[in-house]
Image (cartoon, one colour):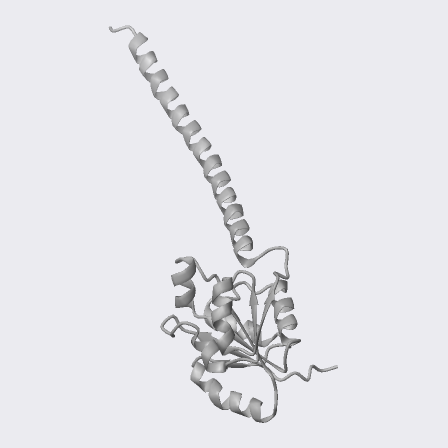
Length: 202
C-alpha cells in the first residue's frame, strides 16, 4: 500500500511558517513543536518524532543550522550537513514541516513565533527554570526521555575511538617495520666498518 503521508515541507526561513500556522489554526489543528540537531538520524530520533506527534495534529521540527551546531558543540560537528539533516526528517511520517534555526536568531525565536499548543523536549534541552519561563509561550510542555540506547554523541565517540585505534595499530605496525629496517641498515654499516678495520694493510 502506498504511503499517503504528504512529504514534509522544508523551510529555511522561519517567517515562511506564518501563513502555514494561520491555515492550521483556521482548521482547528493543534500544533506540536520540537527542536534539535538531528545529526546522524537514528531510530531514537524516529521514535521521538513519532511520540511527539501523538500530542497534536501537526508536528513542526526546528533543526539547528551547521553554524549553530558548531558554536554549541565544536568545529567537528555536525557530521551531517544541514541540508541532509533537514531532508532526512522529511521522510519520517510523523513530521509535517522542518525549519532551519539560524545562529543569529534571537533566543527561543521559533517557540515565540509558533506559540505551539504543545512543546515537546528532551530531559537534556532545558533546565527546570527555563521550562517555567517557556510555559508562557506554549499551551503545554512535554518532556520525553531518550528513546534509544545510544545517542548521536555516543555513536560519534565510538566511531572516533574505533578510527583512532585502527590508525594507532597501523602506525605501530609501520613504525616497527621502519625501526627494523633502520636497525638492519645500521647493522650492515657496522659490519662493513668492522670488516674494513680488520683488513690487513699491504
